[in-house]
Each structure stands twice: as C-alpha cells, then as structure tokens.
Image (cartoon, rainbow, N blue to C red):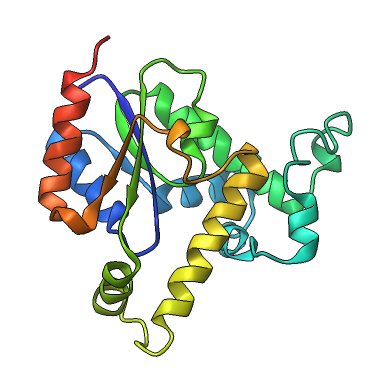
Length: 205
C-alpha cells in the first residue's frame, strides 16, 4: 500500500477505531493524538491548548462570523498576526505534512484531507452512522451519561463541522471532499476496515 489515508468521522461512528484497525491491516503508522503531541513539542504550546481548539469551535455568532474568512484574514500579517488557534492549526499542519512525507500512513481528523489536498496519493474517507447508533456507542465506549449523550454527540459533530469550515472553507460532511463515505451502523468495524482496504487496493494509480 502506497497511499496516505485520511479519515474524518462523525462522533460515535467508530472512525478512530476503524483507522487504527486499517493501519494495522496495512502495516503502516497510525496518527491521531500523536500529531498533537508532536506539534506541542515543536511549538512549546501545551497539549491541552491543542485539544481545546476543536472543542471551542461552536455555533456561536462570533465564530459563525469568522467562518470562511480564515484564508484571507491576516494573510499579509505573518505568523505574529495569527490568532493562537491559527498558530496551533499551522503547527498541526506542519506535522501532518511531515508524517505524510515519510510514507504511507493513516491520519484521523484535523483537516488532514484538506492539508494534503495537493498530493495525488491521498485517499480521503468519511465515516458516518445514524444518531441512535452513535448515541448508544458513545455511552458504551466513551462511557457518556446516557441522559447527556445525545447532546454531547450533537455538540461534537457541530464542533468538528465548524472547525473544518473555518480552516478548510468547505462543508465537513460533503461527499465532494471524499473518495469514499461509509456508514458504520450498517456494517461492523472489521467489515468497514475490509471494505476500505478493498477500495484502496482497487484504486487506479
């Protein structure tokens, strides 16, 4: 396998686990929180700062106003003119490009598909599932309070969508951004892995 696989996923869909299993199946590195650790090490920012960025992407009025402006705001101001969030995104982007330059791998989240969009050997995957499945899985796997699970799932999805919209300027869940979109509630995680593996191996060079 000579591809770099990026995975975006709805919260509770099992996308991270699918990514891990896929990396094991192909025998390639898997990157998720490792990107945060490396970026934090290289910049001196705390890992907590990196982890808070996506969660801060809410549907607030101020954030909505900022959406779509990121590409242009401060483009002549240099690094010093960037917000903390944008500096963190830049640091993560650099790490993502570094690990991608080292060879085939699986990268979960963090707009990796957008950051690596100019590379021909990248395969972008989106994992989704119906809401009931994701709520049930979130309570079982992430041990969420069942009374608050639905709210948390919705908030996480909104955060991821806004984060992607802000940095990539596009819809996070648009089929136009991906080579393959897969519903994990209609197939078990191992089945999803083999489905993606078969797709990647069948792709034309």
